[in-house]
Image (tube, rainbow, N blue to C red; front, side, top):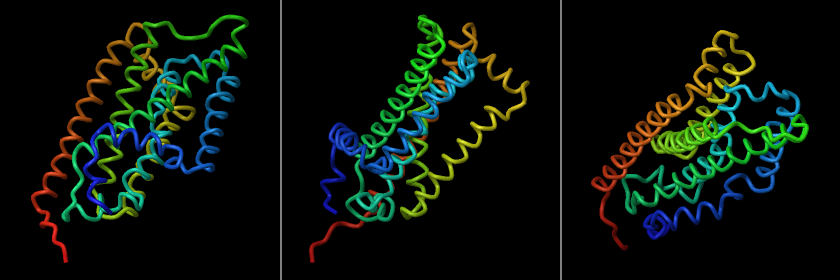
Length: 253
């Protein structure tokens, strides 16, 4: 592995990761899985639920669905063979540059947010076509803008959380296991808060996303996501700095 890979800047790394996103998703099989995901969540559910789909809690879930699109990419960008030394050789040169890791995290956050936006837009389009009777069924700007802003902040948070989960272990196998466990737990919580949650719990959660309370909820939620994201990024920087200080000099035999 050449050291140049670890010296790429933010934009070079970001472009490279976005260009390789289809491969990171698992190639044809991964893309097919995403198509099925869009078909079920973006078409079937809105059609089946009808106007119940406009429940504020469901809207928030769809706007914050970035982790559905980040899990495989996080594993591919941080724990596959091409980046094995990022996990197995932190104490050996060449150590990853912060810009290199930042580009990977930015790519994961962008892919997650774009995936969530496409899924949300598809669901609203399905609802409009099947139940709109000529009307455009879309939340007003006062509800939609804070919701999408919160979704973007959540995408950044989950991208950094995935990076921390991967980089805190020593091997790619441990990284993949850690990331998959975390995302599986997130999906389980989501299901428990969705169809199986007690009506009282769902009512309390939905009240946070009413038009009059959503801007404040979104502001508090986004601030929390950004704060924790910054803390996780500082941890990543500390990890890299420690690796650089402990790295032995390169030798040519």
